[in-house]
Length: 404
Image (cartoon, rainbow, N blue to C red):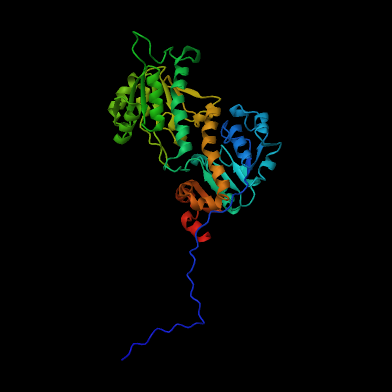
């Protein structure tokens, strides 16, 4: 049987289909507001005048509440010269589409929020309230947190910088409370010929521990470091470039070292939850009178059983004649340096958001930003927050894909 030829009708026109590519949208002008922080002893400001001038030069608008930069020694004049508009009332700042804050959203501020605003701020899990989250969800807010924001290399740049500042500050603070002026025992941290060096014990070999060790070594102290992660101890030794006295956290060894030290630093990180308490009340009672404890972990509950939260106004208290410094948010005491560090991360992020056509678009192109977003148009996208406050969790990746 003869094979039938395929029939091609002249009435059809065959054309190749074009592939539709995901084209990057055109840039968007950002309208950024920076309110003055009144809570949490917060002195930092999230964008410095230098950063503001870069944003304004790129066509964006910045409104800043009067005196917002004073804590970090930036005047209104510095900001107006950088091209920002100075607002006399908080309400004007909250009209902006994007709010950049250096403290979490407070209960008073929730009432001022506009629907569909985009907020960049820390969360401070310890003081987060369910009502605040719910009100932000009702107003369809998109919120990005400092703590969870990741950069292209998968690190948390703001947390890292704050940890570096806190770690470097630890020994300066300890030195202050060892001297006679602050009723310390009159000891210099070290480095004097013929005099045995001051003993410093650091618990935790993360970034805070590493920078505390660097500063202590530079001051001539003898440093002993405890951590249960051998990897972190190795990394710290490699980064500092010297073999140091290190140990896993073993109570008897730790107690023995604390008994004879002059400075003890709590630098354990509490991965999402509370920091483990590794120094008991009894261990502290056996420490020498006049020893200084600086508990940096107090942000997550503290790793000394005797620690209680103090403030920048009243930073220390004594227990068993041991001086305790337990101020949360140490970087806020070095507000100008900390503001520059935060600004270095947020300014490029804002520029990228503007060039990318707004946050909704940038979230699609920059996958690493997604880790920082805990609210997206009112949907809670952070699993830890949803578990803790028993609120509905939505996967951000699914949310974004469904909007495309």
